[in-house]
Length: 128
Ligand code: HEC
Image (cartoon, rainbow, N blue to C red; front, side):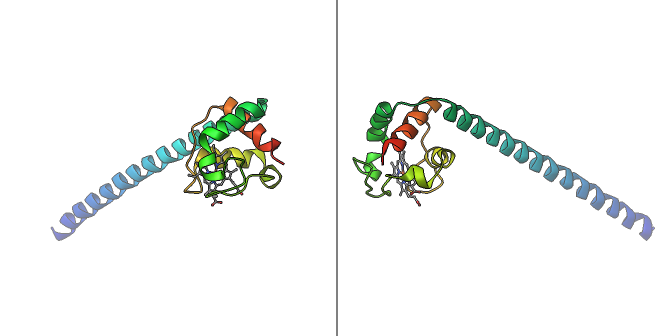
């Protein structure tokens, strides 16, 4: 009697274990897929940006609208650092990530299409 009831309890426990294992597995899989898709999207964005040729003039305008508050009117630095010679320290991919991913608060992340990102990059390259 006691053995059969304890084995029923055991079975119940085993079922619970598998149920939760399954739930955790599905959750991990979902996050994994989302993470992968997000990476893919970022990579496509970066590749697209690097393919385009930008205009320093438009980039300058974009910079004056979005960045001068922190980086100064001539990009000499204010709250944010001086951006002259930034293109010698960071490569284009790193700069794109800096602008679009918001990895270093208080600098926000910017939603910017590839053409305008390319314009900004060209502007930053024009600062010597
Ligand atoms: C709210 C203020 C703010 C705004 C707006 C802002 N930045 Fe920044 N930015 C910062 C700060 C602060 C840092 C330094 C972050 C750190 O290194 O921890 C930074 C860092 C950077 C860097 C890396 C500099 C380095 O030496 O590593 C680049 C490139 C940059 N910003 C570009 C831009 C561009 C382009 C824009 C406009 C699209 C912009 N930022 C708008 C505050 C800002």
